[in-house]
Amino acid sequence: MILILSGKDDDSVEMVVPELVKRDAEFLWWDPGDYPAGATISSRLTGGSWRHTLRADGRAYDCSRFTAIWNRHPTRPRAPGVTDDGHRRYVEKMAAILLQGWEHTLAGRWLPARSLDVFRTQNKLVNLGVAAALGFTTPDTLVTNDDEDLIPFWEEAGGELIAKEVEFVEFRVDGEDHSHYTTPITRRRLTDRHRLALSPAILQPYVSKAVELRIMVVGERVFAAEIHSQGSRATRYDYRHYEQTFSTYAVHRLPVEVERRCLELTAALGLNYGCIDMILTPEGEYVYLEINPAGQWGWIESATGLPVSAAIADWLTATEHPGESA
Image 1 (spheres, rainbow, N blue to C red):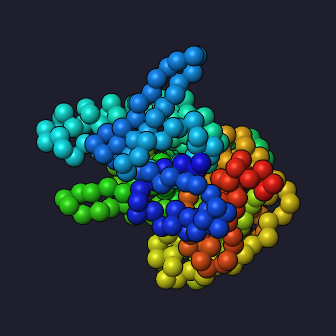
Image 2: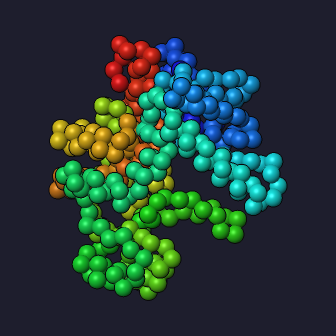
C-alpha cells in the first residue's frame, strides 16, 4: 500500500492519482495537518521494533503495510480547537516532534525522503556544496548578513550581482502576502545594504542565460525542460515572475555527463526525487543553481508532455509490482 503525505488541495497529487489507479495501486492520501485534531497515531514498541497504527477518515491502517511513502507537501500539525495561542503552539509542536519520530521509524521507500532529510537537503548551503564537489559548475557564492562584505563582492562582479533569499518563503505583513524573488543589486540598492543585518542573503554574480532548465529526477530517470524566460524583463532574473504568462517551454536533451551528475547529486543527498534548476548560458555552459526536493513539475508536464507523473507512479508501485522499473 502507498501512503501519500500531502495537503488535500495538492494539484500534483491529483496528477499522479490517475496513474496509480491505472496500475491498480492501493493508496492512502493523508495530510499530517489533520493530526492531532482529526487523526490518531498509536505506536507500540514490542519485539524490538515499533508497530504503528494510523487512524484517519474512519479507518485504521497498519503502517507496516506502507511499502512506499510519497512525502509530497504535508501541512503542519494543527490543533484548531485549542483557543489559547500559547497552548495551541505547544500542542502543535509536540505533535510535530511525534510525527518526526513516526517518520523515522516508519519502514518503506521514501520519495523524496523523510521530512528532516528534505529540510536538510533543500538548504542551499548544503546542496550547493555537494553539487560543487561533484563537479557541477556553480556561481561564485557569498552568503552573509555582514553589509561590509557586500560592496567588495559587488565590485568583483563588475556591478552585475543578484541576491536570493536563503529559502523561498511566503509571509504576511499587515495582512498582505509577500515573497522575495531573485533581485539584481543595483548601485541604488547598495544604499539599503544595512538590511542584510537581519535578513541574510545569498549573493552571486549574474549568470547570462540562453534558457533556464528545470530538471526532474525520479529515481533513476531524468526529465529536462527548457524555460525560455529571457524574452521579457519580468522573467529575466527569476522566471517565477509571471512564468506562465511570458515564458515558453520545450523538452531539453541533457548531455550525458550533466544527466549523470544530476543522478549523482540526488543520490549523494539521499533523495529519490528532486527538481534541479540550472542555467544554460549563451556559450553552452551548464550552471547549477539549486535543487528542491519537493519541487513542482505539473506545469512543465502540461506544457511539454514529459511523463513525470507516470514516472512517480512507477517508482511508488515498483515494490508492489516488481516487474516495473523504479
